[in-house]
Amino acid sequence: MCGIVGVVSSAPVNQLIYDALLLLQHRGQDAAGIVTQQERKFFMHKAKGMVRDVFRTRNMRALPGNAGLGQVRYPTAGNAYSEEEAQPFYVNAPYGIVLVHNGNLTNAQGLKAELFNTDHRHINTESDSEVLLNVFAHELDKSTRGQHLTPEAVFDAVAQVHKRVRGSYAVIALIAGHGVLAFRDPFGIRPLSMGRGADGAVMVASETVSLEGTGHVFERHVAPGEAVFIDLDGKVHSRQCAENPKLFPCIFEFVYLARPDSVLDGISVYQARLNLGETLAKRVVSTVPPNDIDVIIPIPESSRPSATQLAHLLGIPYREGFVKNRYVGRTFIMPGQGVRKKSVRQKLNVIASEFKGRNVLLVDDSIVRGTTSREIVQMARDAGARKVYLASAAPPVRYPNVYGIDMPTAEELVAHDRTVEQIREIIGCDALIYQDVEGMKRAIGSLNSKLDGFDASCFDGVYVTGDINADDIARINEARIGQEDALEEDTSRLALPNAQDA
Image 1 (tube, rainbow, N blue to C red):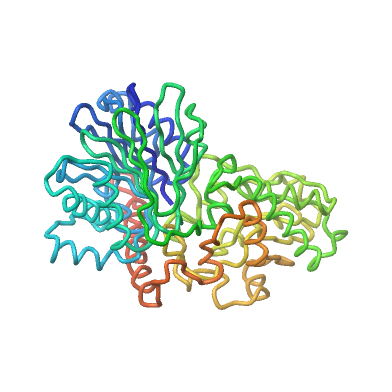
Image 2 (cartoon, rainbow, N blue to C red):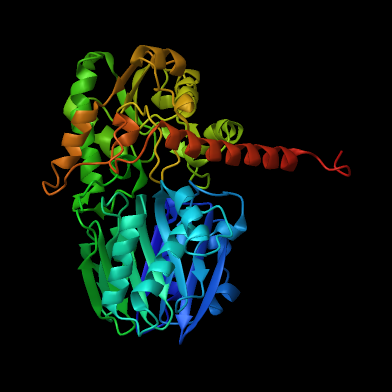
């Protein structure tokens, strides 16, 4: 889950890209990067940290040009702690290409071996985005055969990328002296949209909120398997480059990841969450008598629309019982249980008067590891709640995600191989109510009849690309655990007092 944006304009784009990345900051807080093009030269700045911290005035002044792209990153593949793996990535041939990527390649290791042994290209990091860039660069070199670059040659290269690459990928690339390319995997797992400004500028971005928030009018979503090439005059060329594209967007985007004011693949994220609250109401009634609930309280932020609709349908007062510190990152994104546990009470504080002497129904968007839920339930009890019920607008998360969301190993998922009653005991609530998988799919799918389905793999274990087995998941998890071990080691070193302080 990264956020990406690309722009072609008749005016400087550095501030525009910066503003767009701020609107995508929720999609990644690990690193940020921008590259711009002036004439045929790229200007790049990237580093670990939030957008506002990575880019200072001096950095912005050093990003001239009327075309460019940017990314906010949270890592799901590669080395999360290496500044070298912040995006964009660059290769100098053919033409000079920079690329940003949202998603996760499931065959990155095999591709890396192919690139070295057959394509004779060098990969210098552990990032699957660098692998993707080099696959595209190799195929573009083949499709142009040393000739002048045309949109058709670009599309031919993308078609070959689709044949070689597996997994999820929404991609934006800038080709020196030619324009911006955007394309999406044949299943449309990760989102990508396009809009146009009043001055003719064309922007592509992960979410529509990034378009609208920068003064661009949304035109359409990039289709699964489609490639869009925007030349430096702002003319848009497009072609379907996949042989059998189908639209299976990631359902977790609607549950949690995307901003509620975005529209993804024709579906309002806010309306999707209202619908989840409506279907959740039926589950609540079958588990807890409504007259046994005094108040419904959301666990901010993503659960608010579902909780609002749930309270409305059940006729139970809706109250805000938690105040969120907006300057602490999302806890399920934070690698390392030690860091995560410490952050929960820093992230949320209770309004005790809303809990004291009441039976409360807490509503969350989803429950992943259960550590945060357990802590929040205890906070409600400490604030004086008589009974604490917990409802999840999403079904139990039972399986790892391999398409670009930092879902942990199966063993870390609180719902893996456990009954709802066993989960309830671990979390410590008086009743636990989950959405059901089919109800979730119907609630969101009803908003766009043109979808072929959803990637709901973390809920139902069905991996839509059809190429995932137990060995693949074990390999991905092994790499992820290595990253977390490295972070724990770094964190423990940072926590040691130095000799002078001692």
